[in-house]
Length: 148
Image (tube, rainbow, N blue to C red):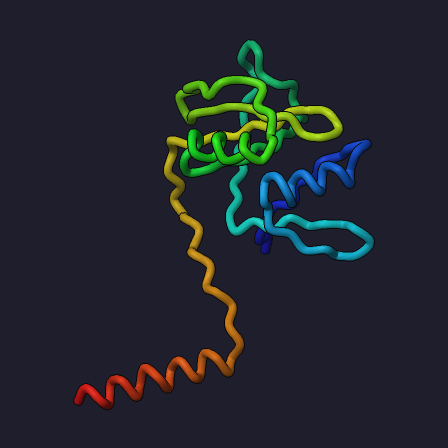
């Protein structure tokens, strides 16, 4: 069963691009060895766009975008961290959209979607050791008994 999407950027400045994603965009990541960072996302989606309209990308093209809940707030925060945006936020109908530069050349789209997905991401539960979870359960049970 497929359970995720793996996206890749190819860059002649790979170390700088990894650092940009980690330090400027603050993307959570795992170092899988020798400086290779895998960026971990709790949520992802994928669309398939037709190529039959003027200005559309050629068939076989793939693209990577980032999305957020509040584009104005996100853009302001990223600008404070030194991210360079190449255009103002624009209304594209499906979303509010802008683009920013990445090390090694190229631009990435950032958007605030207007669509609602059928399946929303479940909030991540904070990872706690078993011992801490057991202690918390005992504490709650003790409070309940005290109230009786």
